[in-house]
Length: 193
Image (cartoon, rainbow, N blue to C red; front, side, top):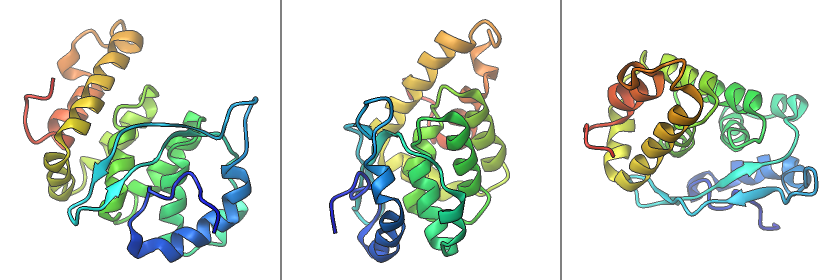
């Protein structure tokens, strides 16, 4: 199979399901949008508890396809949701992170959740906070303990977006939803910055 943008985005044990999803999306995942390559890769690498390294594109520029989504098994839908959580459209990212958070998601979803926890679209951060505050987050917190540099990077990113876009509306940083998400749910320590 042709290499795709998410070849390092999922563990090997779900390779078959991943390849099925990608086979339905391959053309679009490699497409361009306004003459921009299909992705802008990041250097962030997330490590799962079994040592698997997860890396995925910063953004993809392709259309969400509900018809494809409906053809997938529940497990494949979760893979699809993770892929489209990297979409350039904030509404699409929000839709797919909500789909992930509404089910019992696997550890390999944690990197996608953590990355969106620092998104500049406030509605995405609110969605993550509202969904995770109702769950047992011990496994997610353990994942964060094992990936402290990535947590710090995302925490700093969240602070930057608060300062740039939301400081006027939410002047008290400690009550800002992004801060609360990191301090109450994601973070296992208060020394993030």
